[in-house]
Length: 501
Image (cartoon, rainbow, N blue to C red; front, side, top):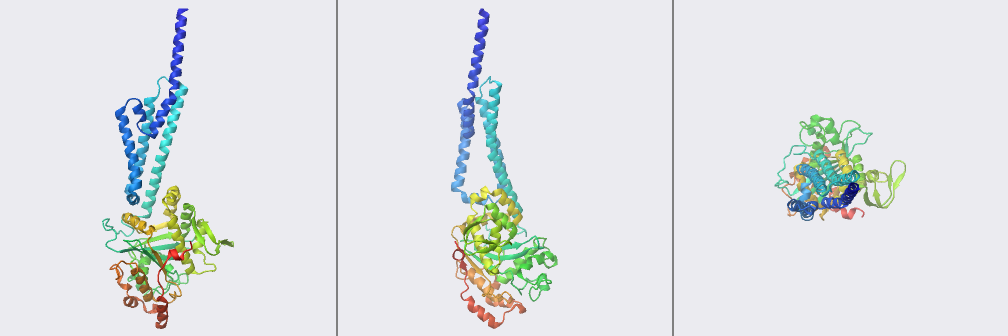
């Protein structure tokens, strides 16, 4: 009897111990969760003060560094965000941070886990810790994946050294120039058309100190313009005349003509011939240096807008939409990609020149609404659309300086627009001297000094512009006089004043 009573008492004590150990699981999981939220809690709770203190200090340092960087050094972060090497390091850093965090969670549970847990309790504890590890791994993996996609898109669009191998001095990225001139091209590469026609051509001349910008727009149907010196001018000594009925000699044909005829742009690779010849041609027409270009495929442009979640703008009058009689009604609208494409390209009941104005208002709306939150939340789609849609010769090394400059543009810089369209310019018989003179005047109005910048092209002066114009492209004197009278009032206008808002 006595021995049986002793066995029963021992069993009761074992049962009590098992119950006591199982009941300690919630506390262990609570400490593990606390350690996942604040490193070192479990270590401190188990008397490991040195390790717990170090983990807590590291956690606090990482948090403080993140807050300070986000609040104090945002400008520096934006510049680092366009440097692929930093982005690669950041992606690796997120992975390392995730692994360290998971290690802290697992080790914390090991320290506070009760001994002698029964199988169901052990299973429940392990499952809870696995969930915590997953919760830690997901944001770290998401961040690493996003930064990888960003780095991939950045490297795909912007090449190191640029497409033309131009080197950039990061200490003086603008090479002493007071303005940087970027040619903005909208390419119409439709499925039912071979090649690319640049139906939108605008030179953005940006003051590198203030961000003030002048947009100089040329119509797609400009004719009789001179080609740059070399094989292109040798082939068309009296101005571009195209090649057969499919290319009657309009400005929007130059890009594809160069791609189809490599001999007129010798030494330049495929997909770079068109931009190089068009840059040189437009530089001659405007009498302005062209530093870089950005080409946006208009059909891919719709993908970008869809990736943003649409673009909001005010439509002042009905605009035909689609081929089935649809209409974009007046009022404030959030346009999807295809709708925005029609808004910018519709010619029904309007002309090319009205369309050019709508395109600039559309670009203005996109620039205003592409905020960091939109980019972050839609990044996967934006990155994929950008890789399909954008091409440029802007080198990676210039991106930090461009980020600083774009910040000035978005912080209240003046953006003016001057369109060389009828009645100011007759597209069939343009007065190129007038175009150059007006372009030079538009830029000089935004210069800090009273005299034109030394970076302005010499051909910007009226006399040199006239001498550079080919004979057949000269406008009769009476027409030039009439155009000169109209030009007296031809000044750049602010997009804030011309775009409905």
